[in-house]
Image (cartoon, rainbow, N blue to C red; front, side, top):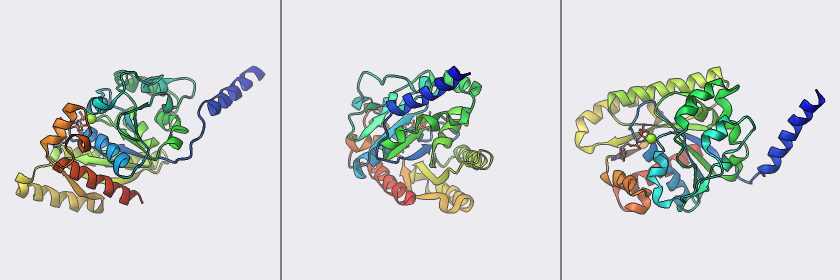
Length: 284
Ligand SMILES: Nc1ncnc2c1ncn2[C@@H]1O[C@H](COP(=O)(O)OP(=O)(O)OP(=O)(O)O)[C@@H](O)[C@H]1O
Ligand SMILES: [Mg+2]
């Protein structure tokens, strides 16, 4: 019995020693919705880069999607070797481990990132068997969050265990949606999930807002109809900034660069700069 107890204490002391506390207190923001392809990754990458560039903040971008699109989107700025562990290893580890073991420094100033982890798909199922399965990511950020000003979590397009972990590790959630009815329905579903998480798991993730993405200025009549309905339903939750369709954003992703480096003067860059500023204002 005594052995068991001292083992527990040893584990605790060792973890405190391994991860010294930094002097920052990150705001953790999930970028999430149920619908795929609406611009979650584009928003995560360019918001993270915008915060690092314009706010001079120390930022960590966490890729929670096994597709690894954050790494693809920034591959021009990533080192070829990864961190000491993968994100799925940290989440599934029996010993408490920190995301600091996963992070790599990117070529974008002040931005760190968790590299592509194809095992996250399998981890999604295995997380169900863990005790405290919703809190694995929150626990793995305990020390990590003291080393950053912002941590951006790019979620997969579903309400699975990884998204739940993201919500429970977050202070706020930003929900991107385009103006198609299915995407709007997906955003509404995610809003419902956030409310359930807050009520049932005694958490308090703030809804930072809904950001309209891929807005096509040529469909102004159709857009206005959807926009009126959306504003009616979500009111102040809808951000003022809209991200228009801009091919430079897709091209920047193909080139593996943030939009601010790829096409600094493009509409895409202007819109993501405006989004960065509005997010900071709303958080304050
Ligand atoms: N504002 C935009 N203008 C033009 N193309 C865009 C815009 N936003 C995103 N795209 C393109 O749309 C596609 C989907 O975007 P993205 O990968 O960001 O979506 P996602 O929600 O993360 O998708 P998934 O659900 O698969 O993770 C990408 O090819 C991206 O380059
Ligand atoms: Mg994505």
